Amino acid sequence: MAPPSLYQTVGLSAHFWQPGISGPNGTADNDYCTMTPKANWMRSLTREYTALSCTWKAIGGCWSASITFTDDRLAMEWWLQNAVGLSVEIVDEAQGVVWDGFVNELTLSLAGQAITRGPLTEIGNAVMIFYSPADTASDEPVGGAKDTLPTAWDGDSVGNYGVWYKTLTTGRATPVEAGQMVNLYLAERAEPGISRSIDLTGGAGDSQITLECAGWVQRLDWPVRIPRAGGAATANASDQIAAILALDRNQLWSDYSGIEANTLQVQNWTDDDRSAWSSIQAIMALGDAANQRWLFMVEPGLRPVYKAVPTTVAYHQSVMSRRQDITTPGGGRIMPWRVKAGEWVLTPDLLVGAITPATLREDPRAMFIEQITYSAPLGLSLQGGTADRIDQMMAWYGLDGE
Image (cartoon, rainbow, N blue to C red; front, top):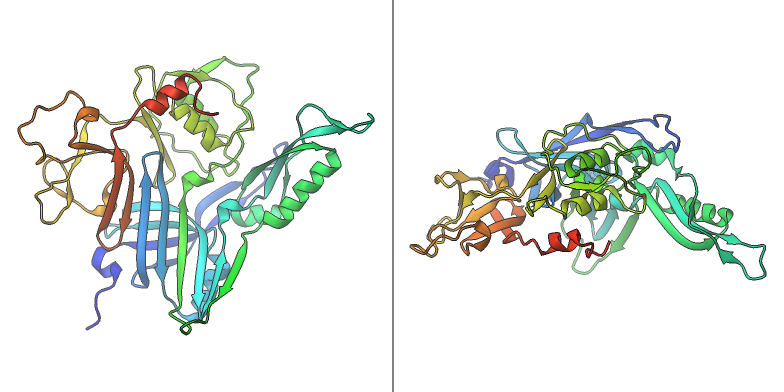
C-alpha cells in the first residue's frame, strides 16, 4: 500500500484561478484597471504536491507560500506558461481558506534543466519617472527642479497581470532622455523574466515544479498621491489607511470591516515618492494616542485588518506536553495552519507559582507572534518578541529614516 500523500495526511489543498482584468477606466493617467482575482477557476492541487509551506506576518498577514509537486509532461508545460499571476487559495478539510495570494514565481526542474519564470513583483507595466530637467541653454548644463512625465504603461502586460506600478528616479535629463528611460524599462520589465540553468552532474534527477507565492499585501506597490489642498490638514489614522487602499490601481479592496477606528491624527496628504505599503507602514508605526502598538495585515479574502496589538492571550504552548501542540487557553488543540500571527502565546507551565506581571510585555512566559511558518504536514515555527515599542517612538519623533 502506498504511503498517504500530504493532502491525505493534513487535508490541505491549493486552488488556482485566472484573474479577470478589465480597463483602463478612463482616468487621466490611464493607469487603472479592475481586477477580479477569482474570475476563472483553473486547477486544484491535492494529492500531487510533495511539499507545502506558508508564512504569515503580524505586519503583512498572508505573506508567502511555497508548493512543490510533480505532474505529467504536458501539465508541467501548462504550468510553465500559465502559472505566474494566477490567484491561489490554500484551504483546509472544511474548505476554510487559511492562506491566499498569487503565484509570484515558478521553477520547473526537468531532465537536468531548471527554468524559472518571475518573480511577478519585479515587473513594471505602469511607469513614471522623476528627473531634473536639463537647462541646455547655459554654457554648462544644470538640472532644474524635480519634474515628472505622464505615466507610461504597457496595455498587454496590464491585461495579463493587472497594474504593477514602478517609479524611476534619475538626475539631470531632458524630457526626451527621461522618456527613453521609461520606454526601455517597459520593454525590459513589462513581462516576468525567464532564467535557465542546466546541470547534468549525476543524471537528470526528478522532475518537479515549485510555485513561490506572495500574499496580496505585496501588491501594495502603487505611488500614493493625496493632495493637501482643499481638505483638512489631518485625518484619523484609520481613515487615512482606508483612503490609501481606495487608490489601488487594480481596485482590489472593498471590504474595510477589519479596519478598526484609530483617532490618532496624521497628516491628510501624501506624495508619490512613497508606495502605498510604505505609507501604510509609516502610519502604522505611529500607534495611537495611548502609545499602543498597531498592526496592519491582509487576511484571506482580501480583507485588510488594522488593529491594536491584543492585550489577551490567544494560545497556550506547554513545555511538558509530549505532543508540543498549540492549544487554546481552555486546552483545545489548534491545527498548525490555523495559528495566527499578531497574537500572544503563553507557556503556562513555566515559572509556576511566580508573581504574574501586570502586562504581557513584562511576562517572560509570553511571546508576541511576529511571524509564523507552517510546513506540511505538522511543522510549525513561531518567531516573536514582546511587542517592542521603540520603533513606534522613533516614528513619533520623525527618526524612522523616512
